[in-house]
Amino acid sequence: MAEPSLVAAGEEPEERAIEAALRPKNLHDFVGQHRVRKQLSLVLQASRMRGRSADHVLFSGPPGLGKTTLAMIVASEMNAPLRISSGPAIQHAGDLAAILSSLSEGEVLFLDEIHRMSRPAEEMLYMAMEDFRVDIVVGKGAGATAIPLELPPFTLVGATTRAGLLPGPLRDRFGFTGHLEFYSVSELELVLRRSAGLLDLKVNSAGFTEIAGRSRGTPRIANRLLRRVRDWALVHGIEQIDARAASAALDMYEVDKKGLDRLDRSVLEALITKFGGGPVGLSTLAIAVGEETETVETVAEPFLVREGLLGRTPRGRIAMAPAWTHLGYAIPSGVFAQEQLDLFDPGTGSDEAAGDWAPESQ
Image (cartoon, rainbow, N blue to C red; front, side, top):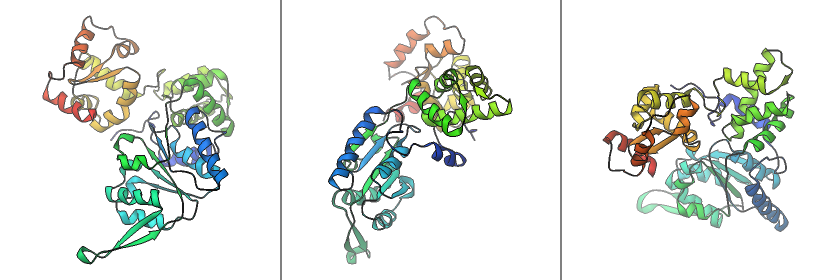
């Protein structure tokens, strides 16, 4: 079982209360995502002026960028109650019918990971979103009867990390879709300044920059690293956190200058030292680093690929030039000429590498 990672964007249960305290309560306090924030503000303002529930809203993007926070802000800006559920919790149409039938007029229903909802529930949601009505089926077989149930107007806010898995009919029923992007270092500094104020921490500008640079463009990770730096400073009796203190604290937690943690570096080290930079199949790579295949694929790879440190080819994974440089290895001559052949020659390589790679291209 993989150990918890400071730079994984997932949220541990014990941290949810702290995260909730740091969440902005309105669009004015929400940092970053300027395009989505501006568009959403217009949608909500127009709905208030009409005196009607806001259109259904879909937020998509990687974990930790603020989808749940924006859903809460939608309810706050509309001065409406908020009901929270998730796609995995709705596995039967009856589960969704129970939630929908208990909604009050104008209420905001937030469904996290909406792409993981069951197909029967999705089909019921189509009619609920468009006509504010659901059909409750009573009985089985030839004697089954559909009883229409009228619903009060409500606003559905969906969040997904994999928008491509949403069926077209469901996506089309959202009146507004906002895709959240990774944050820049300067935007993360603003997030950290706000959080430091709420946590009553003294951090100088260089300290904020140091933490933001290691946060992988994700506010949730930035806030988590800030709390770990706070703990380090408290134990070492440091009143004001500067770049040196932040660097020492994060080095102790094995988060390097690029935001790579132990697992990230293990993957790259294995690629370079054991497989000559690759290509190598995913399952073989996972065995080499002592982790589950899913852990390597979902936790380490997205960031490494985004940073240009790791490449995925039809023949398997390869360590890109910046990875060799970052870990202090000399790049063998001719290695990247072969990688270019790998990128454009899907017909070569072992069955294992091709089998590992194929599902990820979907």
